[in-house]
Length: 404
Ligand SMILES: O=C(O)CCC(=O)C(=O)O
Image (cartoon, rainbow, N blue to C red):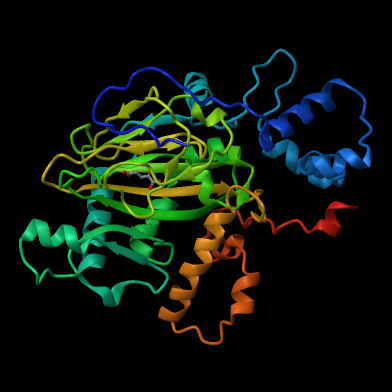
């Protein structure tokens, strides 16, 4: 298979080769809801049950589960009203904005966060880089030492500096940065995609470095759902806020409008000459795709669906490019077991990383057996925090439960 589109600084040739609209679980949910609205209950022979797990999940579910699924599947309109799948009615989005998100899978809100708040979080980011002692143990700080040495021309680079740090991840236990995930305006928008019960699951400050000419500052087109062991996808959304002006020149986000309607696709490393470890992209894109550049001012925020194909281009400026980001999910989402799915490989990697993290945190007695039974959902449960309402994602549904 070939790799994702090669460079994001130039305009793309309009051609989507891989709009594979094979039915995904959410489409199944919607289809079933349509069927339930329009026809009497259907018989589901046991052979079909085996093959279409999600199908029977709903059919065999208790009335309370069915209600939940109805809510999660989106706003089912009364007759004569417009139907929406990806957005929910709340007071913040106009009909035109709802339609924009429905069609494109993202929406940019100008001036969503004040400059004063951004400056406060930028200052905190710098402090976190400079003072390891103030970092919560759960936080991950990613550095690029080779880059720092090249930029400063010295071997004695200060490891605790903003000039070395490319990402601060998992700031759920850091009160100042976490204000972003609790911000009332951000949450009001998130409510339009996730509903009133909101969980903050994945937090990052991205300090995109200058490209040294090899293209490693690029982030290939990918779908964030790859990382998430909870569903449904339509009730998950990202908020990504520019902490300074972001342009094509410093590697703004790129997105493929409408690509949120695809299923979760296979990811891998691109066949670029130089790659950035851990930055995987969608495989099987055989030619350039039609993407747009999301140039934004400081405080502008893009909200996007977890299946949206997105990434970012090279940073061709001598300065870092900063953004703060959180992925949110509905408290009505449910954890899933990714074993046997396209996400299993990632689960195995997460387990390996967890071994290192447990060691670093001084957690003793973690046996190989315990690690083997660990699921991706366990890691995400630890990282996730309820930020509105009072409900964490529901646990993985056990096979026995499904049979009744
Ligand atoms: O900020 C960027 O450059 C891209 C971030 C992104 O897409 C991600 O971390 O998933």
